[in-house]
Amino acid sequence: MEIMVLEVAIPKELFTMLGFSKTMAAEAIKEFSVLGLYLERRISAGKAAELLGIRKREFIRVFARRGIPYFDYTDEELEEEFRTFDEWKRERTSAD
Image 1 (cartoon, one colour):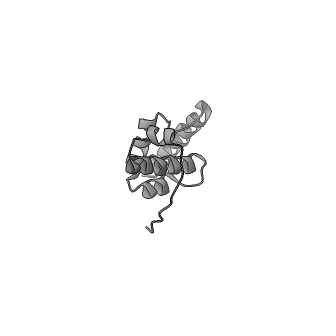
Image 2: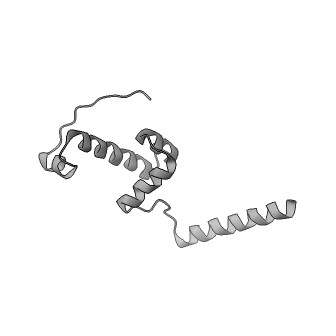
Image 3: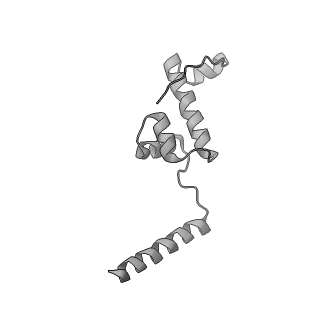
């Protein structure tokens, strides 16, 4: 992956909140940027993990550490997912 170096001006207070070192601040800004793109549905979870240099399951753990739900379903959407899975399972079992 091609890397680009940016110089970004941020308030000193924000720098302090991000971890007291340029490396920690840069990593936090990168992580927040990628999470933001994912939450805006501009990139997939796989692409987000790739941009962060981690596996997809670790990307899910990033959400957990930040207290952000990875699966953002309403009750109705979740019920529909389970119904779809059950139908798929029945079809697969009857085909065997």
